[in-house]
Image (tube, rainbow, N blue to C red; front, side, top):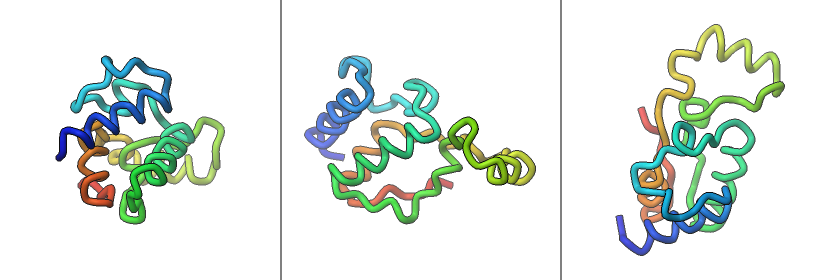
Length: 110
C-alpha cells in the first residue's frame, strides 16, 4: 500500500463522514470504530469506488455491514435466520480501502 494512497483514503473518509482526519488510522474500522453501517456504508463505498476507480463487484456487503433499519423485511428475516453468523463479522478498515485503491478492487474477505 502506498503512503500517498493511504493519506488520500484517510482524507476521503474524513470528508465523507465529517470525522477529523487525525482520528482515522490505517486500523480504523468503518463499522466498529466510525459507526458506518447500512445505507451509509453503501453510499460511502459507492463514492469511494467512483473516486478511486475501485471495482466492488466481488465485495460481499452483508459480510461486513448490516441492512438499513426498516429496510427490506424479507431480506432482514433471511439474514436473521440464515446469514446472521457471518453478517457484520468481518471489519473493513481504512487500510483495506487503501489497498483496494492501489489494486483497483475491493475483495470479499472470507
